[in-house]
Length: 140
Image (tube, rainbow, N blue to C red):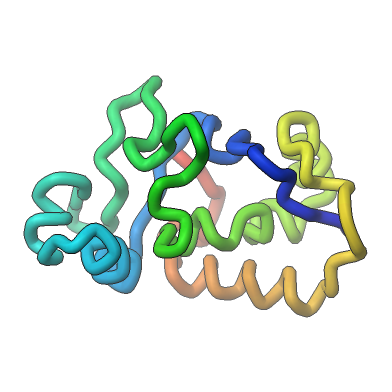
């Protein structure tokens, strides 16, 4: 398994789906943007009983994606930071190959230490347990 982000690439940010947030993500992003967590949530977060995600209308891109890349890159959410080491990709060769059709970084660079990839996937699984019980849907 090989992966290396490609300079200037934002393909992962251009895919349809939601960016789910942990409480740590909300705190870190608010701090990065010099907002209170309350102000950040009011402006950027859609919250339901069981999940928090960036407030992005369907068929629109993340508000933080700018022409020159992610404007919150150093504080980006766990979901963004761990891509492509998500459980549904690391544990499934077919999904990995399908993602490689649009992600130019897959198949590039040095071999990835499988323990690292599995640890990243485990972090995702722990942060978003509702997403990894039964079948997974990015739009659930």
